[in-house]
Image 1 (cartoon, rainbow, N blue to C red):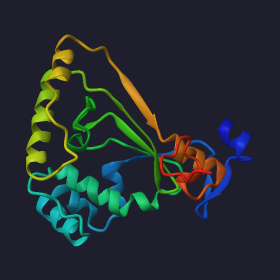
Image 2: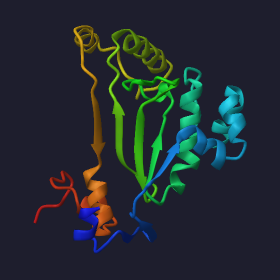
Image 3: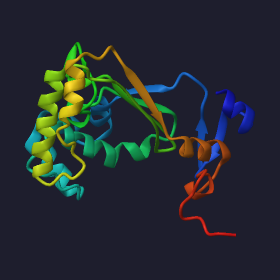
Image 4: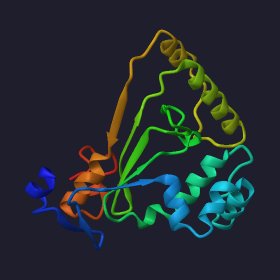
Amino acid sequence: MQLAERHAGGLKLTWHGEEIDLTPPWTRLPLLDAVRDRVEDGDRIIADDAFARGVARELGLEPTSADPHGKVITKIFEELVEPTLIQPTFVIDYPVEVSPLARRKADAPELVERFELFIGAREIANAFTELNDPDDQRARFEEQVAERAAGDDDAHLLDDDYLTALEHGMPPTAGCGIGIDRLVMLLTGTESIREVILFPQMKPKG
């Protein structure tokens, strides 16, 4: 808030033609609720894996046979809901299938303790509580290996060194990654990320 007031002239600004109000509190939106309430047939997408895959294919998302239901739901969310998140919104409670390093929620183990912040339909931050259970982590790595074998190049590899470290014990840990470049773009009204990258590798000389 202080950065916006100091460098953007206040909490209300325009970015990419959109009027954005940074005044707190910001919306907290569970991912499944977003699909349920903002996507046609959202309830059925969440309840019926085969139906969700059909919707995903109609959208051109082409889920693989190894993609779990939670991942298909998230792809639909990214395609249909993310572009509507203009005002500051914390999307919370991601499916465990798309968060292989995050800790499960105690009251809903199919979800994880994670949020992403969206402003102007762009992801600004990603944060989660780190998974520190080595058995759960190994099982999730093995699921990721299966997805990778089925064609998902973004799936994690099995990391034995990391698992060994977890077996020795890791205290409760959490982290937040902030897209500083996108944040600077927002506060300065910049249209291109190339204008705010501190050390651009593609910037012409001179």
